[in-house]
Image (tube, rainbow, N blue to C red):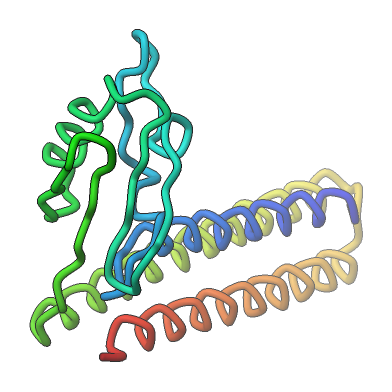
Length: 184
């Protein structure tokens, strides 16, 4: 049963990990290369991430510099950025593409922090669903006579402690990202 608990813990850990990667794509006023993670470019018929076809650097706090390994990719990268929901117009000089992040308005910051909270709440729901699945499995074992009622209670307590631990982690992630967004 302990290895089953480990499986549920791994699922909860994965949920928090997915939340972190979601948060990495939310821009918080500063240039962050991870905002490009979801954008793909057609590279010889293969959809590839911008980081796989170009060097992405942060020369200034509010600017990303994208230097494609092949000049022929500049137009494709520029088009991919324009069609994405990034909301930034790229400028290119024929060699590199610059993305200048404007200062965020107070209203935009509040909208983003609402989005952060919503994603966090979704992660909490996912963790609670994992807890429910674990509890259902424990009840089946008890009904099947594989474990006693006392063992069932012990396992349910362990699952609840795991759930509490991961809900706390999600709350920490929400707080961290909200603080990052609201910092001017």
